[in-house]
Amino acid sequence: MEELAGEYDKLVRFALVDAAQASDALDRYGILTLPTFIFLRGQRVTDRITGVHGRDMLEERLELNLRRLS
Image 1 (spheres, one colour):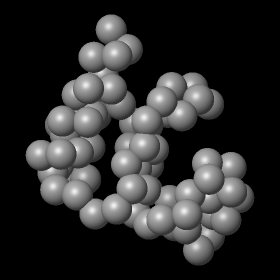
Image 2 (cartoon, rainbow, N blue to C red; image 1 turned 30 degrees about the vertical axis):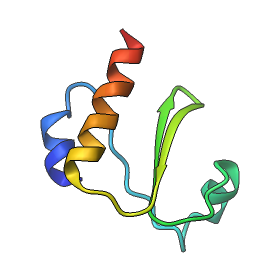
Image 3 (tube, one colour; image 1 turned 180 degrees about the vertical axis):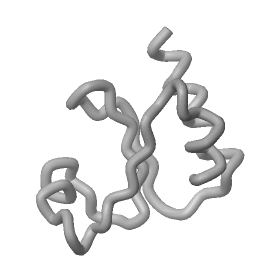
Image 4 (tube, rainbow, N blue to C red; image 1 turned 30 degrees about the horizontal axis):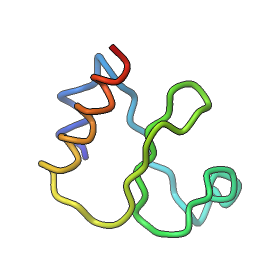
């Protein structure tokens, strides 16, 4: 994630949330599985990925979401 955050820092904002400290965020976004990656546009969830995945899959999904915004 750190590598992707560095490569896409001009396009998207990455945030790491400590689930133990942010139960309100878990409730708000319906997070039941960790890790969960949520793509937001404003306050709206546009996509989500749950479970452990490799960098290639995460980058592919990130690119897909960026194309949807264009």
